[in-house]
Image (cartoon, rainbow, N blue to C red):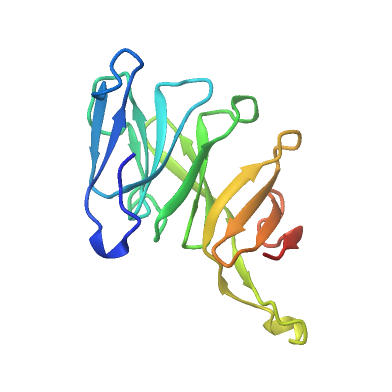
Length: 188
């Protein structure tokens, strides 16, 4: 995926898929309106490619279909992130009824995206609340605003548990069952 980390020079992006037969020229090329920040191929259906963009959009391409447009895309109307998407990751097939993936963004949200028959459905999983590092603050003032999310990973044995890395340098242990609070915080 091609995009820019320089927020001043943002423009369109591109996805190029290469094969081992010809490593000098891409077999598939997809143009995007916004810079591509992250990609993830589906582990069981390798033709499905989830894409996260600088403008907060997530998309799914079928790289074998021959089409140049995504088969699913988030929008302002259907819901999307408001800041760059830093990571997308497919959910394991045995835990899902329909193909779905997760995304994390600087807007402080972890979102689950489900591919239904004709649209990409958005379900917020977690809002990353900013945790104050001051120990002497009263408890009711210790949370303020949202923390920018950078990365996440799911527990291999307990799929409902995951960790999230934030722009502030903290790592939070989270659960899909408790979307409003952290189970544990590791300060960086």
